[in-house]
Length: 494
Ligand code: NAD
Image (tube, rainbow, N blue to C red):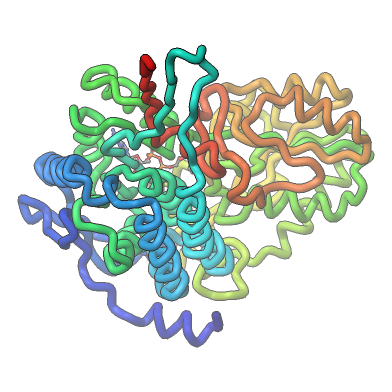
């Protein structure tokens, strides 16, 4: 990747996008479209289909028919594997084009996007492609006059609803295991970041995925997402996004066919720094990256910094210094470390959280304001607020933006108490040179993932899922497959 290639791709006009149903691009049934605004400059650069309830129903009907006639589920594991491996290759072959398209759509800095989006998506698809012919059924330990067999069957039609922060990566976390196990999928990308994921779905068809096995419908969550949630023909709903939408999806399931619902929701992840941290400067740099990458729009972002009181001032100064070295700006410039906020709505929301933090007694030590307004884009200075109490809004509510709240603590028990003082439980970290303390903290802080002496970067071999109101079920690793299969018992009298 070099800057010239990126600039050439960014100069290309982007044609209008439409749904992908039964292997074909189709417009919305009423002809509706949505403008796609780039957070880089606030300009409309293309449109997508604005889906209707009828569009979603057509996509689900197509996926159901594809599943029932076995055109994918009925293929041999080896045949499915071949298609998925080819798909991963095509994603890699088109990585830069996909990454630049995605950045124009959602504002993630290109250095991160190239790895986290096409790079990670290809790796995920390949991981599940490689796994799919190594997953065996079971023979139960019965008495000798019977045979108890446990089959692992695809669930049928999976509905997948995706957020805007990492559409390809999170899309692949759902699509990889769902398709590997022989399911059909209907995908609903986010309004403000659908393009790269839609292109990725096209590539699946280029790789040989049969028509109807993967359909994708763009549009508003409250219209097409709701229609998916209420459908009697979706067997499993998998979702990444906000807690409010997650709650609605559970209601939709209860009001319709009681489909299984798996939620990956938000977080308010504590990054806990003890005075005995081996390298405090390194910890400060990682803490800054752990919250400010992708302008803080990362579900596992370390948005709460819990610092042992004896080192509080020095450590906050070190994080502020490390943050000041991170250049904020055009996400398609390779020297940018922090890109754009995804939308104007999100930017206003972030700034509102900063105002609230100050009104509750917090002190801004860095940032706090919109910047680069002359570009027309949505940029925010990375913001550090000290004096944030465990009860404060900045502790209790997810911002999903570049805002770090700092809270001091004095004992291990107090650190655990503050860390666990929210409804969330997605991620966290502890920094210490004391091995026993590290293990105690890993056990005591209620999250799906705890880092020790690092933040972020957990690869696809380990699960990612939340506890509490951060969700249920896991993406990534072989454990994710459990969401996309039914166990069926065959009890045979011999
Ligand atoms: P969101 O809930 O507003 O939207 C997510 C998706 O849900 C979008 O595709 C949207 O169109 C759809 N949607 C919205 N309303 C709907 C409805 N009524 N019915 C069905 N679908 C609907 O969330 P967002 O703002 O796009 O994403 C940010 C949130 O996602 C943050 O809270 C963040 O922490 C969370 N997130 C979590 C993870 C994780 O792995 N746990 C990863 C990334 C983001």
